[in-house]
Length: 200
Picture 1 (tube, rainbow, N blue to C red):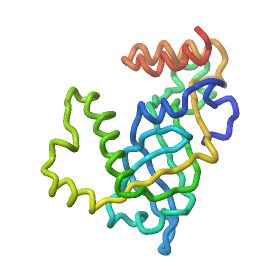
Picture 2: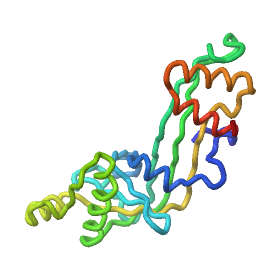
Picture 3: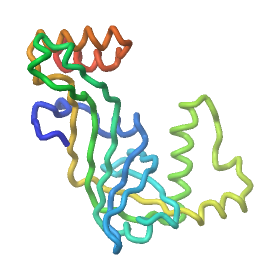
């Protein structure tokens, strides 16, 4: 996470909601061959748990159960040109962005829990694309065969770190210049993030 303490989620910002909204993570863990990263959808669940599944032949799958891991979830980001500042010659380009890191111990899910995870995944993501697919639409033998090729996991959060970098370290003139620049190029989300951080 960014070392500047000014770039943190505001008190009351919903970390599980952020994870749910973005739905995809880099999952870092250790193997006998060294550190590895997997890429998978992640769902926020009750009790500070984050659920995901990996293919059984993924390098991390055999080593995650009972071990610590790190989830990294990146949200939207925006390039910031120095030309948008009051004194461009005094600055360099940067990025504004939101991200969350979650560390904790991982537990492998049992068969029934894996089925519940897959049902929850479909119920979460299918409506986002206007569809209604469910595991129940699969032939039972095919569903079982597919499930036997993956392992479900739950990471229970022990440490959560956040970054919400939205030009908080800039003076008023610079921040307004960045908002104007972003709006000129159509980056309304980037401009809105600055407005929200500054209470405009």
